[in-house]
Image (cartoon, rainbow, N blue to C red; front, top):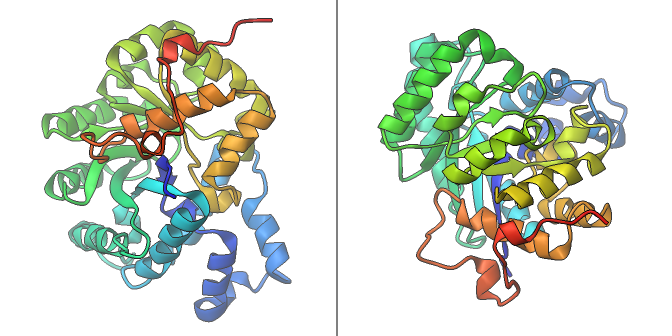
Amino acid sequence: MALYAELHRHLGGSVVPRVLWRYFERHSSELISRFADYSAFEEFYTRERNTLDEYLELHTLVEKVQTAQTLPYFIYRLVRGAYIFENLAYLELRYTPYLRTPEDLSQWGRIDKMAEIVEIVGKASQISEYPIITSQILCMHSRLPYEVNKAIVDLAAQNRHYVCAVDVAGGDSYYEERLEEWVQLYDYALSLGLNTTGHLYETTAGCYPQLLPYLTRIGHGIQIPLLYPELLPDLARRNQCLEVCPTTYIKTGTLEDIRQLKLVFDRCFTAGVDIAICTDNAGLHNVRLPFEYENLLTYDIINFEQLQACQDAAFRHAFAWPHSQRPASLLHGLLKPEPVKNLAVKDS
């Protein structure tokens, strides 16, 4: 029974360790030759890192093998798992198409190949036996030049049947030196009628208020309620939803304890700012969306009513969900959502 919507999941970080290990065994055994067995690989692949930069290096391990030829293999297993084990009705997959093109081509040769990648991902995601509504978010990248990032925005605008938004990824600490560039790119995306999101206010180094007005949703954004709660009324006025990915902040060393997220949820509920609970990199974490829900409940970060409000918000803020339909969770009569502003937890 499909119930949930996932708004923030990376294509590279979605490959669960067992699937990646089996692929390496069959096609790239040299990549796992340093590991004694699968258990050693899984421990390496899913362990906590000290910084976001160290964590993001793992993406390169997967990006190198997600080619035009292999993407259908990985996506089939991703969608199958999302439908069977996570009960997803809706899934937005985000990735940088440039990083799935052959490295031996010139920059413009790789740009020309990006459209093929988008089409492959789009077709591979449509699996009749696992009927999840899927869409793509194309990620600009903080380490890629302006010409490539602008081409990614253009590609998104030209492929609206597959693509629902653009994003910027690659580590939010690197935005500052090119901040004017990112403002121009987001303004350009909005002028083309594209939805926008961005990895922002994830870490204390990635807090750029100049970019907030250009975002339809905010990727992570946890430092806003933690450090800059005075910005929350503006987020509520612009109806900007936070894409909160709880396990990520432990895996990247951004937070020391998941219970620090209680303040994030409490302040957002009080201010009327929606939160969609997401996985970010379910494969790297070996944690699926229902466990993210369970973890937040177990640690008393949210209650069941607040969980239901977040689940409903995920459908409401989904870029490609058919909004003439009520969320699947509501169709099943499971939720009786109250306005978010009424869900604040009062101090006891």
